Length: 321
Image (cartoon, rainbow, N blue to C red; front, side, top):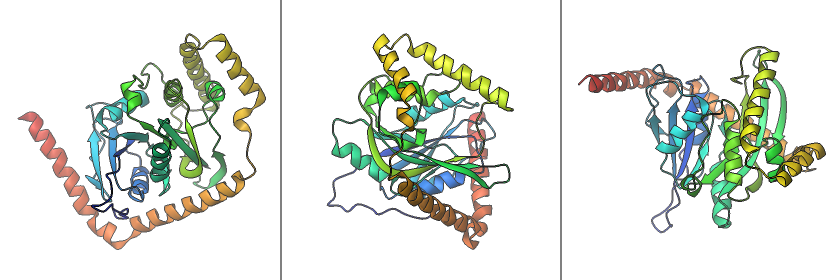
């Protein structure tokens, strides 16, 4: 992979390490997600690829552009919450974020969020806008929408409006006890945001810097009725947990926010931001596709496959000895 970000000079103060955690099912889109990290302009990133698939997951390459890639695996398939916690345990960064293996980060994403956190010392969580692109079975775009709402805790209690890869948060929140709840089969990210929100406000960066690509990998099951049932059960489990924590006033505020549609109120400038983001996403996708189709990429594929096979053989041989 190429696209090296600008490097700091010896005279520059060291910048904090950022860990981007990918819970991977080894989808064909994983390479796109990694390439979008390789395009990041921020110079200090480690990538933690968590094996959520199980023994059949191939070993990723050790480098993504100039960034190191580490493979976290536990020898078995992991659900979403367990995979997220495995990533948190393996990460070394001062700031941490997630990227699903079918989504993308635009080049300035990490830089903007780190800058926001460092310029606001009281903030421990920052999030940006995310452009959602939904694809039909034929691979064509069905519709697009934008997640870019200001932070409003009562609204977050009522409904999750922050995609998981929008956020960068401080390691101090892990030390405060925030973890993904492995008792929740769905909405583990929503629950995690509520935990972070209990420690302070989120800092909203009003820039679209990520893409949520919806290919239908919902994880809810097949058929509309199965999806609806899973969603209802998932929300019920989350509310069952939090109703024991929230006060009556907090519950009332959440219901009022849902009634008043606070999280659905759009700003006039969002159309321009969405258009700009769509152009950036299109350009990033074009660059990724160009790389995959390049002669050098095709020529080096056998070497990459051979390297992965050697690593798997070496690991298996070490385990037997």
